[in-house]
Image (cartoon, rainbow, N blue to C red; front, side, top):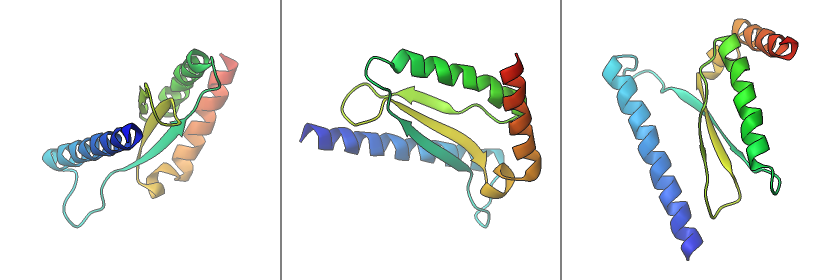
Length: 118
């Protein structure tokens, strides 16, 4: 029963967050009713036992690739109890077309290569 309430609470929080993003985009004037909304990729990650801090450090290092490629950093937060994941990452993509455009893919590859060299 407790697990069910945790899942319901998480879904409610995600719905509120999605509503917040949708309302802020509309307030700025970026979105009209005929246009599709902004796209986010959601990733749930589970750390190996005792390795959560190592996983967090790995994602912090990965932020340099986002900065170098010009992509926005993901929103991320830690899950504290209950379900089978430790981190949730929300990556701003804008749209599939723009995220996977040849220019942005090339920038991400260059950013990854540059971060390996430094």
